[in-house]
Length: 76
Image (cartoon, rainbow, N blue to C red; front, side):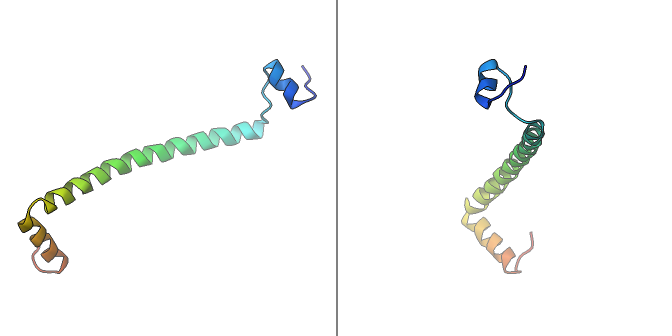
């Protein structure tokens, strides 16, 4: 079936996407899934950091000891 106009292709159910565009779309989909996987992993790390901060701030003694570690005072 030969299509003269893109509008005709849409009406006939044919894809108006060029093969190079399809390849680019596949590449983009693959990259997006990799980014999503990385963000999922990052969220887990951030949750652990937030929990640690919450723990340290939960007690004045722990917060004081943490601040001393930053100053080179007490080692953990």
